[in-house]
Image (tube, rainbow, N blue to C red; front, top):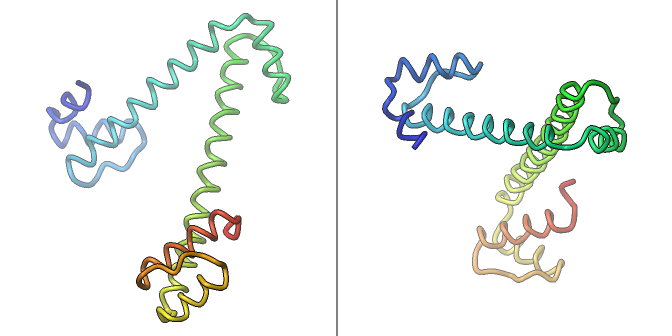
Length: 152
């Protein structure tokens, strides 16, 4: 498997491969192997997606691009534009999720300063299950905040 091939590489070879990808060439060998493995998976997925787009008839491709507000042109240019557009959307979604996680971490830190009884009262005020302890109540409150858009 690809992971085995990467594990067979020396640390220096792994560092060179990571540097070639523009990634940080540091850390434990297993971490470097996993990073390179994930990069390979992404590259394979991108190549497969590009092939799927190449298989589309040009008129379908033009129509799809127009629906996304992208300009038509040569087929390869349209495919590159489509892939760049998708990458932008993924980046935006990832950034959004990161912000949510940051807000939840901040909320958790604030909740951890409260007593178990305060947390119990907060759960009761929101008609949430009261749980059996501080950690459980904090998790319940965080889940509720996420579910009800309080972290958006």
